[in-house]
Amino acid sequence: MRIALAVNGSVHTLDVEPRASLLDALRDGVGLTGAKLGCERGECGTCTVLVRGRPIYSCLALACESQHVPIETIEGLANPPEQLHPIQRAFVAADALQCGFCTPGQILSATALLRDNPRPTDAEIKRAMAGNLCRCGTYPKIRKAIQAVTRASPRPSGRPAVRPSE
Ligand code: FES
Image (cartoon, rainbow, N blue to C red; front, side, top):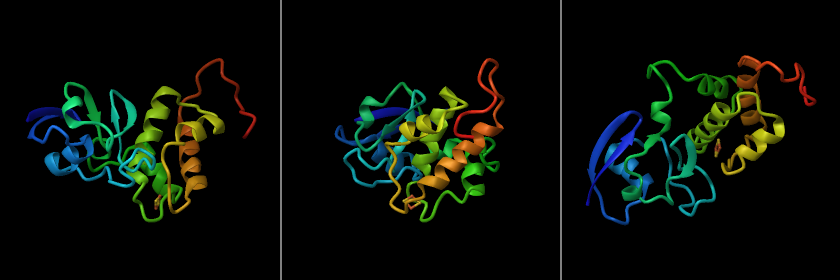
């Protein structure tokens, strides 16, 4: 079947099997390989992409049901492409990756969190990132990277100047 996916601000027309996952369509059809195939059953989060700004497991989503909605992948985060997004820079600065297999998904989940809540608490960070596993165990550095971005963001008025964990 012919489908159209709106990915990173561009529309891509693809011929896919009706059973094709969004992950397969992105990797094999659009040529964006940042989202990875891990467990293929919605447990590890390496396939995370943003749909309508929300992180989803693209291995579980059908490509044909992902039309007409904005999809964001890690390739679309840097804008302009040669300039890393602040969250990507924070991951590099915090050394928040080892093999890097989980990193695109981690960064997209962190992006969704920080768009919704620019000053999350440690508990909110842990909850928001719970769907992204890291087999290398870099969780403390991932949280450190996210915290670094939260510290750099403007503090909304009315919020306490120092959080209990600081
Ligand atoms: Fe290797 Fe997370 S950095 S799986």
